[in-house]
Image 1 (cartoon, one colour):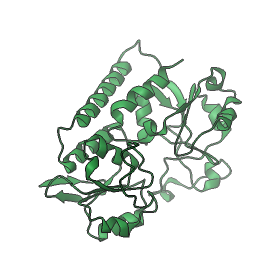
Image 2 (cartoon, rainbow, N blue to C red):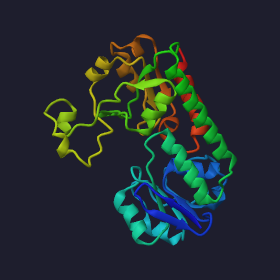
Image 3 (cartoon, helix red, strand yellow):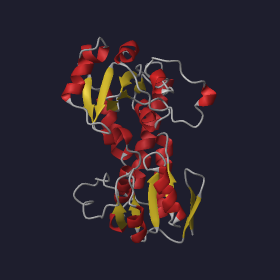
Length: 298
């Protein structure tokens, strides 16, 4: 018997490693494939595009926010993978109410991402998969390097980095996110780590007083809308323009190149793979090194 507890505190029990899997989270679909179980995938979301070339034959079940619940049920999965943030709450609840074995994830940082991979490997019955070992090694190496760097008086000051996730409206993420933790791990400092989302919308844009903290309990404050003036004030040395969720363009980059900030002055406004920044799971085995190289590049 396999028994795990998911992000909602629910206990999920499987009699054996899953053999019919529907994954509705892109990074988790990739992780299933990396752990050697791509042949067990019987359904995926339309946004589950990795691994390219081999995932195409797996049937789709709607988008991450528009799950075709009936289609998922018809596939008779013995494991459904969803994410508390990525997938629509009502549709996830319908899958649970239908009696399907649903695992809900929600890793907030790199350590929790590694814990997710460990849990996934258990659910798949592949606790000794090479991809799991590679992910463990990459995270352990990165954590060790970060710890050594913080303890060393000779360590370089973290690179001040800004990563937008949307252009209109201009948005980013604070320090309570997987991406922010990952950036810190590779030697960067998220310049908006301490900037929460404010409510109402006018307050987030600086045009009104924000609600008192007791009135925002339960609301997601991790993704603030920001202004160009705020970017100037925080003076990032590096701007990473990701390929998702918004596909940043040269025109977008030009907006930031016009700002009086170190990143523009030094030509350090660069494009980055959004999957490396935002996809938790087995991708950490390689994304850590790629992001570290971007941060170190001069």
